[in-house]
Length: 90
Image (cartoon, rainbow, N blue to C red; front, side, top):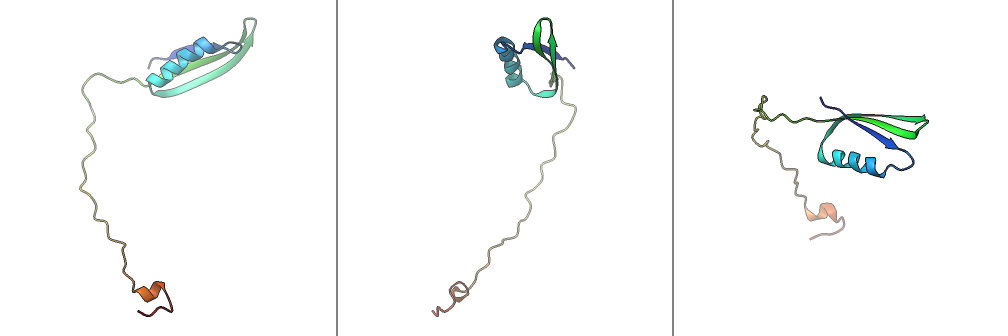
């Protein structure tokens, strides 16, 4: 499982943020871990991103079976008009 690592500077994150957003838009992510660090080079966010890898080989699993549509009983009931309008005789 390939990991992608990013160091995003807190004061000016634009360049690294754009690269991370491009990865997140293009691939599904299995997991992501982040840590904040303050050091002599400034404050940084460190991220480890594990994107989902798609195998190019033949499918090993079978698609789910196609089920016939279920019979759904009708819930429509017919009531006489006086049921809805008491006092009305028609």
